[in-house]
Amino acid sequence: MNARAKSIVGDAREVERAAELIRLGARLQLLESEINLSRERLLRLYKEIQRKSPPKGMLPFSTDWFTAWQPNIHASLFANIYEYLDKSSDLEQIDVVIRAYRLYLEQVGTSGLEPILSITRAWRLVKFVDAGMMCLAPCTRCSGRFVLHSGDLRNRFVCGLCHMPARAGKTAARKARSELIEA
Amino acid sequence: MNPTTTEATSSKLLEEIRETNLAYLMLAQHMIRQERAESLYRLGISGELADMIESLTPGQLLKIAATNLLMCRLRFDEQMVWNLLTGHSRDRSAGTAHAGILMAGKLAEVV
Image (cartoon, rainbow over all chains, first blue to last red; front, side, top):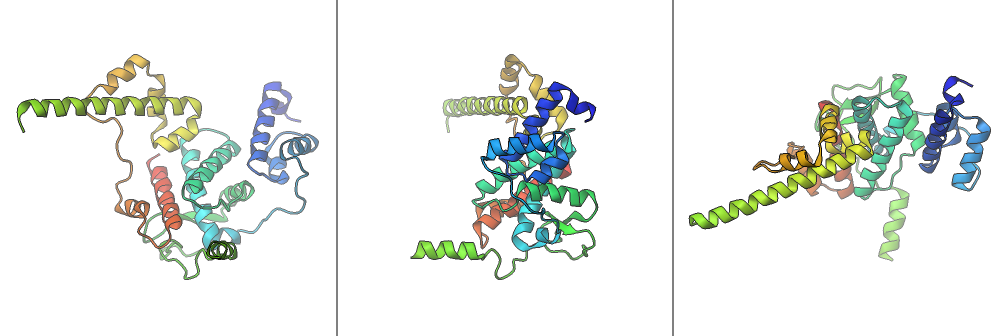
């Protein structure tokens, strides 16, 4: 255990952080790598807040999810907010992730969209950008900044919102919903 | 318009500006004190300006509010953002999301 976790105040802060992350739906792996508490305590905290055991299995580790049409809009919105908060504050990275994610949820809610980016994915995205695997690049039409693979060509990049694919947003879930309304 | 009406209109206008200024500054101060990092994003202001607003006393707030100028201004001057927000695009939610990305990106450039 390091010095931070030994102090009671520091310990309380870690618990508070972990609790907020769990409330936002974080997977256990996120907590284990960002929070300075034992796995056992994290598990207990998780069960106490979510009233169930954490899901098992690996985290989604692919960068491809972020470049599909709909996820890209959500990921880009989050990434722009994150970047703003990261530049303007001197908080620790995980605290920036928490705040940016809360603002993302809020903004998506006011747009009338379902939040399809989970906090775990949002955190993965931040790590992918840190590792240089993904980046934010401007669309040549609207100059909005969007998440891209770092290796992708950027000089003629047009975002998915300026150039909507024909079937954009027509997911199975939405189709089922509109059929339900019509019926 | 005769001079008395103009005077009445302008004093009513001044009153409204003062009230808007005061409401805006008080809200800004409240937001900064409650959650600083988020407030910078919501307000679109720098950390230095936030520090200054945070330190203002109620008396100072009143003094600043009592002017003939609005202390807050429109943050986005791009026509595209306004078009997206007023919703002439194919998909209303996608339009607002697009505007959100543009606005958040605009903010990041300023900081």
